[in-house]
Image (cartoon, rainbow, N blue to C red; front, side, top):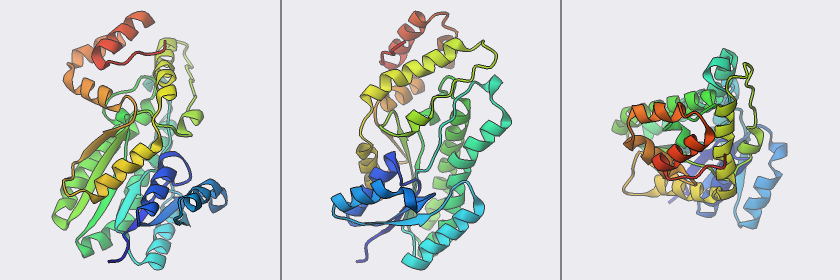
Length: 291
């Protein structure tokens, strides 16, 4: 039987890189999409160290033509796509009041529309073949409204909805959809995601509490290999599920939010000082924050 052909977007770092190498070592023919092949030295070195190969295709998920051309190259070189892992993404900090529509559009263009572009590029041949898997890397932020991360929250909540819709729409064609929801995972995205605009000066506490969450999470961040293993399981299991929680804080936050009343969520935001907020957060989610 031929090796499965698997495309992983955003394969140059973090979760994407670990997943590309992990699946290639497991026998997949892996195509890692990158915006610039010249910057993929670490990805290729990790693959070589693992005794496997990751093929590169230049593709920018934020651009229609780039996705069309990149996926056409994949189909020309490899004949088909059995599995698509939509991993490419960006963060986005800011409270609702202060974020411009351009900021929302920029994050949504990558984190939501990038997924849709890539899925649309592979679905016709998956439908014709009657099989395939699409794994969308979301976030635990797709399950709760992270303070001072309005653009990222908007994009990930939208991705969760589109992923659910895809799962239902594609089931008759034998195409599986899975949503992977990492918590805090070792990734370069956190080093890049340090904006705290606070233009009005009214939201000091919101940014402080957001950075307190990541200040606690980053020292405890789990290896992206854990996410890679979940992705492989989602592709290969005979007992699939729609959602998979993984990495630090994910299960506690998602399950805690599911079990709490909306009034408790609003009351958490109304906490007047950091000590009260930290106490409520621990009671609701079982996590201590460094604020």
